Length: 230
Image 1: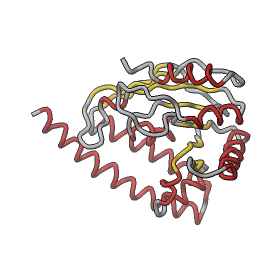
Image 2: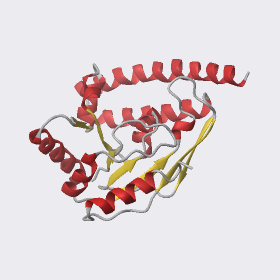
Image 3: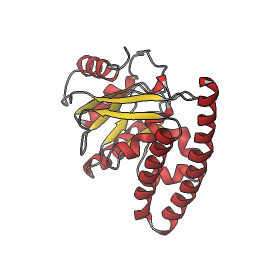
């Protein structure tokens, strides 16, 4: 019975959240062509709509432990599910997120994401692409926006602690920004198909200063983003 109820709640979530998302994607395309100032509000509304669906339809409580960072910092977030990726524009103030380049090929959404200020990541490309990515990141930081990265590179199952992607330390060194690591345990509940009720927690770690050696910053970030893996 519990599994059936979770399946029905998940079905309602998919219908309402993604149906609403389709409307908001259309609205974002209109905003890009008509009045770009509206785009930020539409993206924030998308994040709030997602949270409403998560709490009301899935029965998941979202809890924050610690104070969220403000301004131009590099925020390193554990990545266990689509949950934290979708929640990012609600959680942070006008974030610039490092995202896989393939996502920008989604019709409508991709162009709106570029205009919003997301930063495409193409790991297989060379130095020119890396310079462009760093240039975009510095522009966002100079505008006072937080930069959000998922340093593991992709979603990982809850309870696993893979090493950070090699590119994280390079970004940290080149951007010369402090890092705020954030742990999240979304993978326990926010499954790809049938999602479960319960509590998802964000745990904000201690700010790590700029300029540390690679081994030190990687070790501190790795430990902090896995603080909820027990």
